[in-house]
Image: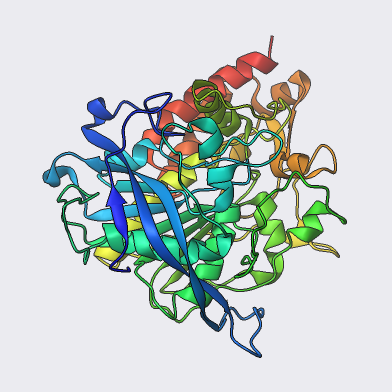
Length: 461
């Protein structure tokens, strides 16, 4: 990190009095602090070396392409007591495809297990937003965020590295310590969707040059790293683009396997389709999970996110009721626990089968109810009430991400289960099996069974 880098905070005030997209959880109850900081200085741009290309193997060769000034923000969630801290900071690469920051600060698993969480605005769209709404930090609260600036996403990789060092075990603690004196032992990088694509490029091109990260978690990853150089363009999936969205998102490269740090990829059925040609084997440093019956997002995840957006007065797309109804969140939660054990005592996470594929072009093999076979089997696919899949309802990009949920008829439910009691017994057995296998945490059980009972009542009148 440059000697000229400046840290400011904790930040207070502004139009609303809280950070954009701050957690909806009660930090006092959790005994956690929530503080926002600004960081400004110079960041390096990278480019591919002359004659090098971002090829399929993932062993990319990058070099310094100059520097530029930046100023951005990050939010720190940290245990107030050192005794509650497990030594690990999860550094999140905020997702900006919505035209504003999205990040996971509402996972009880992180807080219950003593992780610290740092959510970093790493890209230009997070600050400036996208037309016509411009719901980035500038537009949301010009009083709180008047002079933040990331002139190009080309700087994002070095910005991420700098913050990793600022919060890491070897940080030079000066007047302002964002980690409030906690003894940090390791930093895990986490990114979902477009952020997973940027972390893929970080792994393949930047980490061989300089890597302050101890482990990587890529969620709903489409199997392709983003370019090192994009100039002043913004991430904007709303812009019409030629071709089929599924083809544009098709996997293109592997993740390099020579960094000697754990890499954990967890994909829904949709990204499993995209990654079919670039699947990677499970090794001492790689886990590649695929969750059958799920899609890039779910009705539950969208509904939860909407509560935060409503609080922050953010305009968003309408939630389509028919999109996939199997949340992948419980699997995300267990990954942090597996990664912690992987890094601290060498306990390898479980290995699960991949989703089964067949045909040309390959597509998920499906059972008589239309549900994908193979992969991680959540209770909603082992004791199903509906055909949940990554099959979109229409051909646009948002439909592709949402997949679909087609409830079974009452007659079919009668044939499968006879009654609610039998259904819930089978569902609970499948849920407990998923816990025993290490696919979800035990704290998810009650919520899953309660939701299953409600879903039955919504179908069977």
